[in-house]
Image (tube, rainbow, N blue to C red; front, side, top):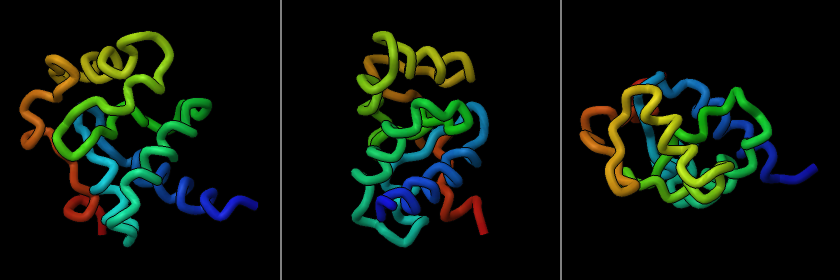
Length: 110
């Protein structure tokens, strides 16, 4: 068993709780999981989740609100299209009103 599997599953559990129309960051998930320096690993987890449509990986962006993971989605703009279908405005790969729609698991989850 890959030791990353458990971390990936924990990352997916958090990602599944991000509300429709909201976004969080790789770092916020890592920090919530007690692994603040593991934002990149959360990114790998989101990339590995593309065969599991229960994980809304499109709602996880970098700490500035940039769609840094978009090249891992099928099609050129699928990540942006998924976000826009939820009412999230994206201009030049940048989430607009990022602070307003940011969902912080450390604040939202017990």
